[in-house]
Picture (cartoon, helix red, strand yellow):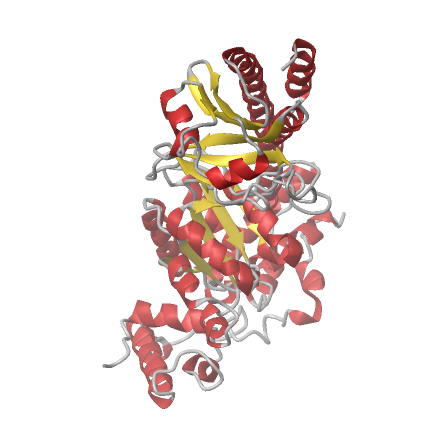
Length: 522
């Protein structure tokens, strides 16, 4: 190899900014050198719990027997080479160069190919940076090579190893920069969300029980499935689980599965490498890599396409994945908290959700009851939202009047906590003197106190005989659920299931069965 050619090749390799472009320049330059029949580069791969191996990353060559035949593919017989196999493996294992001349019958693996193509010599050098073997560069020559050619190849290999290390450093810097930018965006979103939603208000007995569950599951790393109607504040409970866990100092990454386009799901979760598809101009981290060490919150998990659920299950089981367009396996340490307002058992019965994924996600289920079932929390939450709205809007904080409180307590809140927050904020924005006038904000949906089923100021006080104890209510609910289950042959979900008969989501019925100690008879 001439000095001028070596200098030109070394400069082009050093100018490359990604490992793939470095390797492409290496084999391109070597392949253009006089006499070279085939030039190849392997990189060393080290993965947990498996022996190290060499992976073919670039190849250039052409046949003289068949001029149309090119050896540019990297997925052939020598795609992966153990360090204990062949001459190339020997170079990497010993960190020593190798020069072979045509002669013995076993001087290379495929002697017949060498005879047909007129191969005279083989030369290989380890790619070494700071004492660490990065891979092997080797080529077959139709001209006889001498020891001085091996020396030139050593100089080139040293340049190439530095270029590969630099390219990997640039790639890591770009990854860290993107990670910092994305985490910044998540933090901004989290701050905005916190200002809008505030803390969990749990004064009712049922909500205190839910918070006890939150504290219990936060101590583990198992997957959590948060169940409840839309608007009950499932995201707040996911944040509470993260904040109370050992992962509190790591990222909490949130993704609304319903807002991700179907064709971008895989890239959004697992990331992609540059060129993986049209428009992939650079490498991008997925949500799992961004959440490494922390928690990933999958809101509306029932919206994940069925064809992607298998990959999600694999990450949950093995904590490994491959970005789109990349064959490298990434390992992460992520705790998944999922949420849904859909009955996943029903989705499983209809073939729209994998049963094994449902079991994996629902190791620790938490059911958040709707606001109408915890009316003791309505007024404390309303006051909390009022205070937060006044602080954010730089407006004076106005109290709830007796009429406001009566209107809130008599309203059904089909939109749950989110609706309550919107009602309070809408009333707080209106520049009306005195009380908020919530009855007008609630409109016709809110019955007057006299129409409300609950006791009002004008109604007679209830007698002791009309009061049912909590124990009796629990007994009645258990008996009612048992009656429905027996009538449906203990079928929970589906068109003929007990959940449909009771008018409940199947997930809610399953939760209540566990809560009330109801088991399917053998």
